[in-house]
Figure (cartoon, rainbow, N blue to C red):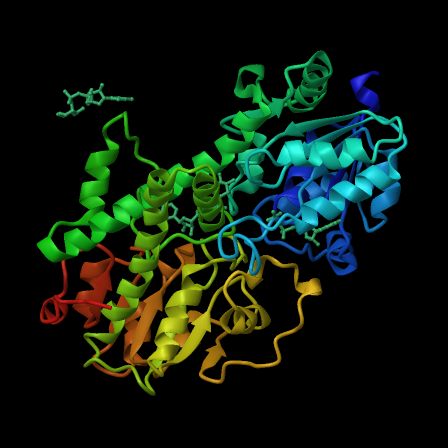
Amino acid sequence: RNNNMVKICCIGAGYVGGPTMAVIALKCPAIEVVVVDISIARINAWNSDQLPIYEPGLDDVVKQCRGKNLFFSHEVEKHVFEADIIFVSVNTPTKTCGLGAGKAADLTYWESAARMIGNVSKSDKIVVEKSTVPVRTAEAIEKILTHNNKGVNYQILSNPEFLAEGTAIQDLFNPDRVLIGGRKTPEGQKAVQTLKDVYTQWVPEDRVITANLWSAELSKLAANAFLAQRISSVNAISALCEATGADVAEVAYCIGKDSRIGPKFLNASVGFGGSCFQKDILNLVYICECNGLPEVANYWKQVIKINDYQKSRFVSRVVAPMFNTVSGKKIAVLGFAFKKDTGDTRETPAIDVCKGLLGNNASISIYDPQVTEDQIQRDLTMNKFDWDHPIHLQPMSPTTVKQVSVASDAYEAAKGAHAICILTEWDEFKGLDYQKIYGNMKKPAFLFDGRNVVDVEKLREIGFIVYSIGKPLDPWLLQDVSVVD
Ligand code: UDX
Ligand code: UDX
Ligand code: ADP
């Protein structure tokens, strides 16, 4: 069959499925791409001027192909029936109850998608795992499909997505690599080639890597674990820098000059967030434990423990210099998303920091350029791990946190505040008029920079008492060197 005739359907119109399919449609005008989702609201948003996710450059790509060869639909079964290649990009949350709760991936959404594919298919299908899943999921999916087989041939491929939010479109246009895992059988290799033909429309052939199914699945988990490990490593060093007077930025710069280490992904922070890192490591830990490898499991667990330590350490750094109490004090929180250039708050360190401050009876005023008040309230009332269950399948939280208010800009958030905490590295926080902000704050005015975005010296000249992760401490903070939680 001629590649020009291939029809693609993607199940799951989320952060991964939406942008990835939009770019495939843009780069392959001869391929028809339909993205389906059980959430009608989400599909309606994809069909409107207000896309359901904020991602630089995405609007432009969607505008160019929507209605031509890119479609968003809630008629899931119809489009699965018609497709040759089916990407599955549904959410795979951490299990909240039962076997493996708090660690293992919950494959409920995946399994229901697979059973639906089995039920409606009448022609041969290539089924592509796009969401990050535990190793050997492809095999389980294969079983579901072949046991419901009605003369249909299925080939399962693993094609993990490596895009990062905030740079998704650039990452998709110009990926470091595209990874395709498949069976080593002739049919398996033919399916791999079919998918490869899609990507090589714009990705240089030498960047398309093929591997066996399990290597592909494990590579995604391992890549995210390595990336998260770098952040926990530099964050661990940041605590030591504060204790010794070294500057983590100088140390990271120096480390990164070693070409074996490399300069990227060494920014000390209040902690990593996002939908992938913690979830994928927990998953990796669970797989190690199930395979009788407790030493390996414990090694990776430590990456998460340091991340949790970094967040609670930050809260202690805020409370201690303010005479050991923030009770009743207004604290401005600048940035709530898990990183800049996204409105996504899944696993954002801001949730834990805000909950820590609220636990000390602070009253907080939050400003983020892309996160809605609804989302913030939902995040601060939600239980751990509930965040990755689609909102439309969740009961709306009945409570709101009274000590939390949401401001429409940084100046309003900081007005009358005792302290400012910067929790996301939005560019606009670098260019704020801090003199003006200082003028409207209670004194002494504190600023706690969890992302190392401000010019510490300038702010000290204005009069702020400044804490910045891993930087030499302000004399005021040196008095309480024993930050313990
Ligand atoms: C990550 C991977 O980068 C991507 O390849 C994978 O497909 C999905 O998971 P994402 O979570 O979107 O992408 O963003 P990323 O840029 O990796 O940042 C994750 C977290 O680490 C953010 O909270 C970010 O602020 C933090 N971070 C990142 C640091 O604290 N320091 C750094 O140096 C880099
Ligand atoms: C190291 C540092 O590389 C160097 O910068 C520092 O100045 C001194 O310590 P060295 O110990 O001489 O240098 O050798 P290195 O190449 O780093 O190897 C150290 C060990 O790691 C060796 O046993 C090597 O076999 C092992 N190694 C290295 C691996 O097992 N896998 C690798 O991928 C790389
Ligand atoms: P990711 O970040 O991995 O893209 P999201 O949560 O943003 O994850 O997106 C996953 C999407 O998959 C959600 O919009 C959800 O409604 C959708 N979804 C989950 N299960 C199914 C299913 N069985 N059929 C169709 N869509 C589904």
